[in-house]
Image (cartoon, rainbow over all chains, first blue to last red; front, top):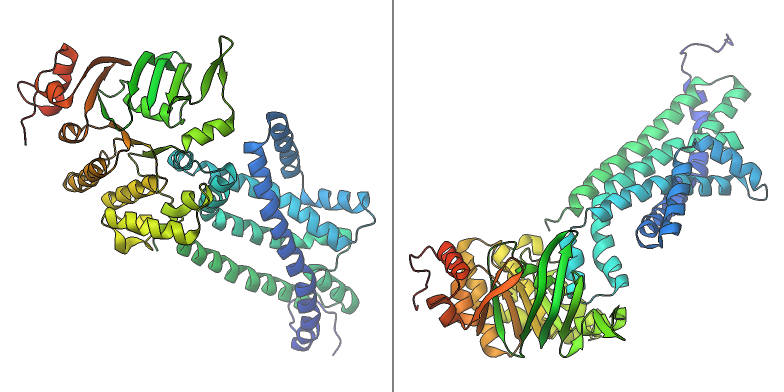
Length: 222
Length: 261
């Protein structure tokens, strides 16, 4: 019977029909953007944190100012701006770059706190051993700062993951958009959108557990 | 080996060291004593370049350490020169300051490999000898956090010695340790003093250790040297009233002297 598709009448065949499309878009777009965006954010965040500490004062001030602006404007605006400002780039590339840069400004703060938390005695020991600046950062400060920051960095990665639906404003067919398109074509929204939610949950929850375990393993009690 | 010439150190308005002049010969073991806040630790930190003097000159091995006089002006030396001189100096800290992200062995070979350019095998072999010397040959692969305070301090001593310093600075190295293990650490330092000719500058509250190891004791008060003597003389017949008061306070003896052991 073809009644008006409304309310919570769940149809398993519709669910089965939409699931492969959703999983494909999840892997091809949502996961890809999150993974690449996280890598950019993690590296750029560290560069920003170190620049604010090591660069000459005017440069450090400029970096801080730019990072503040990025942190204080909505990611949707940044996506739209970057998309129309760089029309030669495809939408996914714009997404990866914007997510990477946006989250790098948050991650830089986490790194900064991590670097500040390294006790002064550690710096003094590197001086007493005549260690180079480079070696001091690479072998002593960053490894210790990272240990303290990995949980927070993981949480930002999950947060970025949950922000990926914003990509639909620049026309990227990620998980949510794929569900909406399916609904638009079939007038069945409940199944695709429920599945979208479940997929997000199934991906986020184990990741947060993983971060928790990583945090325990990284504690200095080996 | 070390010379302070009219050195002044101030933190803001607070002058910690005032027109300080003294010198330490090669192979000397000099203990700095005095009440806290008298500037003893600051002297070690100045030699290690952890602090910079606000005026005057410090010489290490005849060379100016951070600043030199050029055309009547006090000029900072190049970072490269400072680093070269710094390599002749090692320091052991009150709080050990081992790198917790490295194993014991990695802590010891870090600077020999990356600063002196030794091979890992060479540095590792030497590190094991040093660990043996401080009685921790079975702890090479342990992490510092799994060690007791006394063990960590022994690793820190081995780490400083791995750089073959000509000068060793010991900054209250037993102050953070439980009383029953202080003796172990001091025995190791005594052994180093007996078997090497490393110049030592020691800040300690262990008067017995000062007496055993050092050949000179400098009594500080208010950023100045108030008395200087050989340990036997200093501890048995101090001349200055400040020294008498200080020794009386730390030793608790009526006459402010320590008996022979």
